[in-house]
Image 1 (cartoon, rainbow, N blue to C red):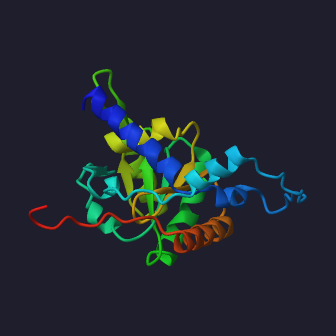
Image 2: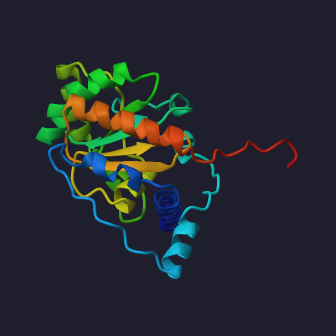
Length: 230
């Protein structure tokens, strides 16, 4: 993979994070015990109003990159990305050596079954691969084996994937600086919300419901398939 390709991926990801409104879920990540006092909003200036109008403009439709990627599961077998079509994704970036990651996995496993018709939970093994100096992707076989053993010992059934160039670009662009970090992606590939740290089952379920509500109320544009000959 060339450096130009990496930069192109990162640029497209930056577009994804800026075009679709995700701030409406900012309060959802805060503990329920925290409250903030309401203060009167200052009167908007003409410049601020113009900026808000620009931000509210419809986002252009583009091809969902998650449905076109080549990526392997933790068994180093090709993962069928077609199963990601039509549903929001909850991408959980984790590692076998991350204690909070491991502790929340049984809850995520239960949620993956309970929400399977609404949202797909997919693990991303953040330490299983990295970019090489020439822009390629190098695998960490020790981490892959540790992740497989962990999945087997805990009976985890939701898929976990070895990062490919797209996932590594996401990790650098977001950026993902600590794990676990979880990204919510809508069915058209737009980043909706991100969460740093682990949660228990009840908190994850509440947040997933809020994400689904935001997606329902603010649908992103889908790419219209091109007609033959266009």
